[in-house]
Image 1 (cartoon, rainbow, N blue to C red):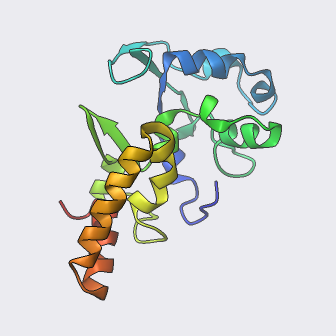
Image 2: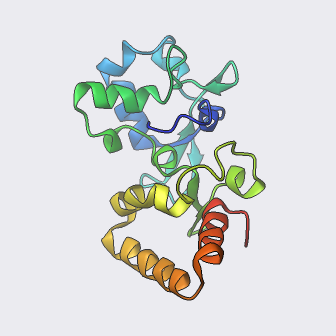
Length: 180
């Protein structure tokens, strides 16, 4: 919610939401007051099977006028996230995991930069922290301290093995998905 360089470009697509979380989102009455559309229009009808989601199933959020239905069109950012902040709700209970991790993502058992990051389409690439540094706390929340400790150690080893400018460049490009 703190970035301001992209004009919420990350919300220009719908997002995959675990089917159990869809139920929690639809049941959150305080979110309904922030939304312009009725709850039955928040998600696509199709339910997809995918073992990588906690429930094994997901639905996509609707896209309205070129943006996710949950984009705050009177301000900025995700209405799910801002509603949680406003009402003291732990946002991880409602916000889709894919949204919280973006521009990192996961599929086929791999954690990696999203396609938008790899292709260079994100306008915020090169601004701020690397993808890993920017997503570190979300990675900790979803995947645990052990993974973050392992990634921190890997990052430190890489940075120690290289000198100043080269190390910064490598972290920036690896973090943004520009190098493979």
